[in-house]
Length: 157
Image (cartoon, rainbow, N blue to C red; front, side, top):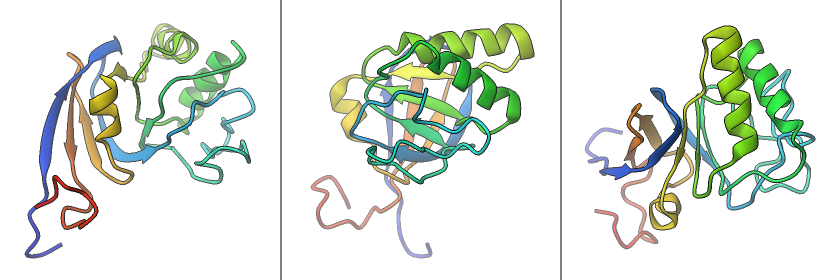
């Protein structure tokens, strides 16, 4: 993107599972159940009613408001971490204990924690699909706007 200045902003969140990660944001406005919603073999969102259906979250920062559904979702996240198909990190606006459990177990079994951060609703909603996110162990999230010239974004340069 020559000639374009990318807008950066820093948000302070609460680390549910501390760690460092970076990746492109895959943003959803909908909660998700990882059990039946994420394919641990491929990293694809397979819930066909979900707004991210068909998208692959592998190596990206999966941004969704909170988890829903089965406690077996922690096993799905754990398996995706083991297989290398998990997101790089998860950002929520409410704590998802099911995802947290999967990440904590992955840290114990494989020494591979998946960072999970909870942001305020305002900060959560400011993240755009495709933004480049960096997560710090203290819960700091730095976002670099993927479309800084967006005329629909009042904060866009």
